[in-house]
Length: 97
Image (cartoon, rainbow, N blue to C red; front, side):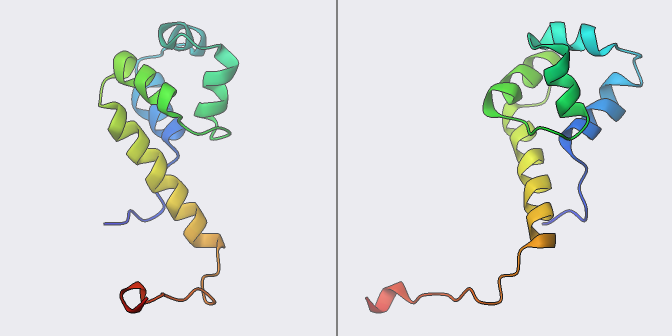
């Protein structure tokens, strides 16, 4: 099931983990083992969650690495669906080949 306009995972992290606990970017970045600028880019939606970051988030914040990647995938797919015109794309019947 597609989510309507899902949040960027960084927004989700900021709103559910960082802000409610008054956690500083520096402290969160240190816990993740990344630079503050790397975490800041993620929180601002300027970078995506990689497989490595998903593992780091899983250990630091909880949830499975797969759930962090799924959240990123849902966000990416929704964004692309808003921009890409697929009118010229056609299905190929591979069973007849």
